[in-house]
Length: 357
View 1 (cartoon, rainbow, N blue to C red):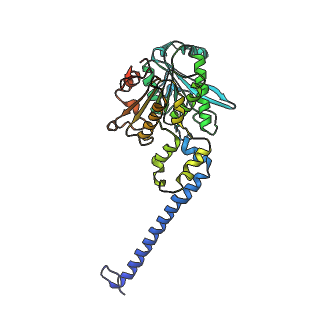
View 2 (cartoon, rainbow, N blue to C red):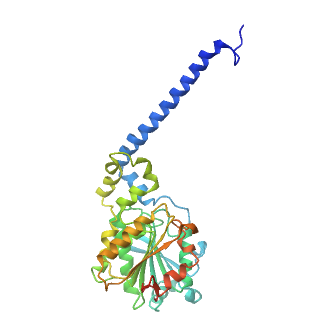
View 3 (cartoon, rainbow, N blue to C red):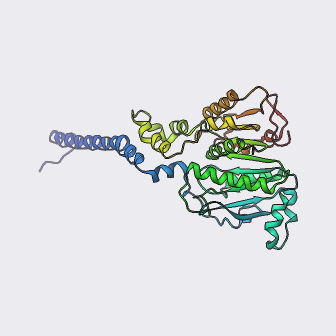
């Protein structure tokens, strides 16, 4: 009986067959992967509105947190309440008090609705915060920002749009998110008296902010200022430059598969168009190393705003955070000069007239 050893000539055909089978498996796997990426994924995405909404809004990706107990995430002096913004739509809201008012909260929670609403008229700035996709108003990076702003003695009003957090379980859309933002803005205008009111949007929330304020400003309901953190100019460009879409860029039907169906559903977030109708001062913050929303999209939005405004119009200021600091998409509030950036009287020689400048 012959043994098959490395030097046995009769083993060579066996090795060749083994190598051939291996290569066939590799080629078959590669062909399958190419077919899935180039055919299956584009077709499934194009014809699946639910999948499109999931990747755009990520509203179901969240950390289980009891949203009716904001103190559990480090926010004492915060009222959790709910507001009806549309037919069959109720959204969850936190009213986070300025630092100077935390210890004045009545012990009897039955007094909270009236007391908290009356506190909005005490002249401290009020910031309506519109968060980005994924998670709820209780995400840790958002709570960190709330605490920084309350230390500057600002009220912070933060909400979960429909479909997010403990708000009504309704399929999110641009129209729906904008309706929720406008309803809360109107509520604050009604309750705040002469206190200055600002809007702060992050990521997807910048698209919501620009769309909502473009309509409100045309009704002469502009806020005192708008902050756009990590904004994009429009959803078309954001999808095209998003890291998740890079592998599909070479497809000649990329727009048909990934952009057209979202646009046809009414989700465009054309901030570069909406911002031209916003008459208040605008401050844009963007990190150079942001890979989720590349800084070039923030620059495009800034250019659109500047090009549309008259020389004597309210200023638009663009602040770039250098890549070497590693702030990325979520950590701009970690900047050592963050508080001075948003409260300084001038930036780049121009008054941005936001938080007391």
